[in-house]
Length: 531
Ligand code: COA
Image (cartoon, rainbow, N blue to C red; front, side):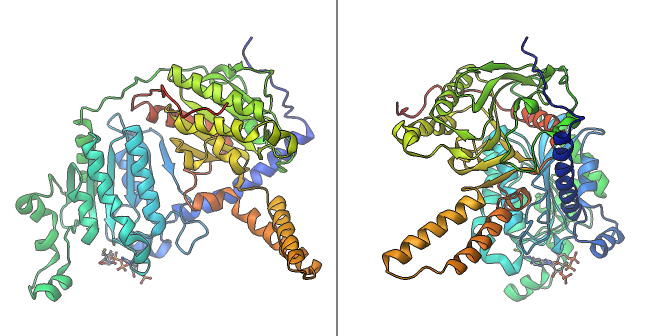
């Protein structure tokens, strides 16, 4: 009875058009992901290999258990900035010796692996994920330290990197550093602050100042090996706990270190689960290319949850928001999904009640975004839309069960907040290529600006230039449109990645597994609900 029925017609014209629009966007996304995979490009990759070194992703592959998935995070970091896509760092979650860990690997083929402002944001996000989900951290280090031309953006906030490592340790979350090359100046504190340190013979260079700086500072003549080589740190300074003969040996030793952590998850793996009744491939044909056209989020839910089984809560009340209970890869889940775009008072109250229930039952929540925001207008203001929206935002803000957010369509205005947008700390937030997010739609925003400008001119008694207004509106519309697209937002680390809709169940399953490393407990109190 609770298995969702589907009205999707994979033979129909709408489905075909939606699928084609989605595939076109996925093609664009692939091209950008390839930029991240290419690292610093052929020249620097070839030079790196010639030095007998492994690439960042090859190091990760050797570190992980064979045939286990790696959930890469923020691969589009720095997109649209002056820095290469990927931000000279690879981060993600993978399984090492049976333990889910956060892995962070510098890409030394990109500007010597130096950290720019986006690298820093990406590293800090990886640490945050490790902290809240209690996942051990393995850092694969080889970096030129701070990207010197952008030092003003990173030097002061960058201290958080080392602070995080020691706070993770204080929280009982293990940290492991494997140093493959340069790790100097501030970078020396990555191994310096880690619980376990592995260094590679004749490769690791860990010192506060290299030979030229030492010469300048004290006049002392020195060399890399005596200042910070693996041999010296393993025998003399004691900074290296393990001495590796080469890179594969270092990764093998890292796997042994993790195997000996005695790390236990708070919640055991729930075991095999029933797959959805419908084909995941059909997720490509649900969201229309034009987000003004509504779609039924139950079609998405039916293709991601176990057995397509969904117990809907209050199905006849506040129907613009679908709420209900399901499980995903065996993990219980409460789902909130926008159905018709706008959030009214009823939807807001329904959401607040549902979120409280999930907290009472210790059930994680999934937010599927397709909202243009809370309803405006006299009737709705008089009906108390502000206080009802505030109830929903209160519930989301003070909820303590883990939240997952997926932007599948629109995510505009305070609706983005109420549906657990980035600032509301969902444990993970992903976007489909079809998503758009901004303070409001581009046309509405341009229209509002135009009305304000017109009123301002009238107040000053000045004539209004209609031609300039039309030009300005077009320009603003275009700017807001491009700034609301997933690649732009992902580049700024406002999500954890843009995913192929067909991978949604797998990605969320990996997230739920990672999340259950830490105890899942709901809030027992909320802020004062304004009734
Ligand atoms: N900031 C900005 N750019 C950097 C950089 C940094 N910290 N480190 C390296 N780069 C750039 C280089 O200028 C070079 O650019 P180019 O190819 O366009 O000329 C590119 O990255 C590769 O560097 P290169 O020196 O050729 O690579 P390498 O593998 O031989 O050496 C390092 C790598 C990291 C050992 C070396 O570049 C270095 O010592 N960098 C400075 C380290 C430092 O003192 N950082 C400050 C710490 S806070």
